[in-house]
Image (cartoon, rainbow, N blue to C red):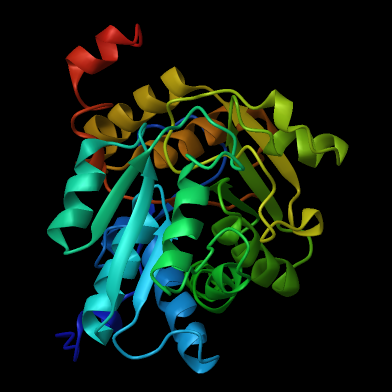
Length: 325
């Protein structure tokens, strides 16, 4: 059936579940990935971009022709940019300098103004991409969506990603895995799924260097444990308000190298060309293999497309320079 939309925004959501066949061939149960790069902005963040903007419009925080200012790892920026184009807003984004050049170039191609900020500073540092976004929003009388602490983020997944997974699996899902980050994809989807079945396991995949797994395991926040890591768009050095421990069952730590190599395996063994946090999520899945039984039905979110990482994780020379190939 031909799908016809009035604008690009209407194409957001309803992404496919695709079974993994090679990487999980030794698993006792089926594993499906929810491939979010089928969204028009090629990532899961399109979902929250639409919800954040719609809720701001309803609350009177975003006026016609206004400016959106946000700190982003790239994907939320892309989602906000395409929704802004459809609705007539301007965009200014701040990114950490570890993010791929492709992400910066794509945002500028979409007409956004982009500021690149240092990675190795605390969130409170005036040079951080969090602080720079807040300053620019104030200077330009712009609206800052604050995806980390705006609960519209996780609500977007409660209203869309969760119901889609439940319907697509006919209620059979037993485990849901997603990379950490703002917490929206993990917790919002988990909230819906646990309402349907409290026994569903919600698993966060966290990079080595993030403080979130330690927080989950101990209920202690220790920013001093944060270290620089290469994985993009996941993990944190603070606790976003979208997190709620009661909707998370477990967290698993993954390393940069293994996660990047898993991205390359997904491309070459499954034909799924995905980004670094997606490889991390599947790497976390593989590390959990012994926990699964023949009665399980696993869904893993793949957050974005590999085209944003061709100069890094899919580049042999870059991987060799890092000692990962």
